[in-house]
Amino acid sequence: MDAWLQVLSTLAAAVIGGVIAPQITQARERRAARALVRERIADVESLRWLEDPYLEYKRALAALEAAALIARVPRDVVQRYMQAADAARSVMEEAPGAGPNGEDVSFMPDGPETLAHAKSLDQLSAALWHPWLARLSGISRRLRK
Image (cartoon, rainbow, N blue to C red):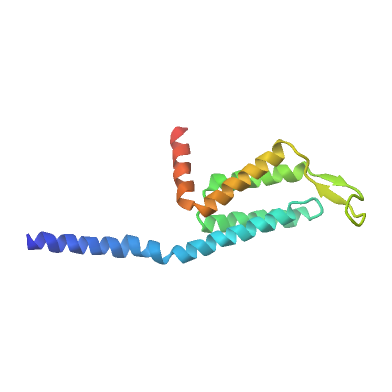
C-alpha cells in the first residue's frame, strides 16, 4: 500500500509541477499579450478613418493580427473584426467643411457595415476579457458545423 501511495503522490507532484504551475506563472504574460491586442485595436480604430493613409491602416491590421496570434485570441473572432473594419472603412463618407473649424470630416453612416463592425468589436473585446469562454464557444461552433 505504501508503494502505491508513493507513486500517487509522485504523480500528483508531477501534474502540479508540469501543468498547473506554468498556467499560474504564465498568467501575467498572457494578460500583457491581451493588453497589447487592446492597444493594437485602438491603433486600427484610430487609422480606420478616410483621412488616414490606407497603407498605415493595413499595417495596423497586420500588427493586430500578430498580437492576437501571440495572445491566442481565436482566429475567427480576429478575422471577423478585420473584415468588418474593412467594410466599415469602405462605406465612410466625406463631409467637406463639416468640422467645427470648417475642415473636412469623414463619418460612418448607419447601416449593416456599422452594425457588423460594432458587433465584431464587442466579440473581440469579450474574447480578450474572457479567453476561456471564447475558446469554449469557438469549439462549440466548430462542433455544430
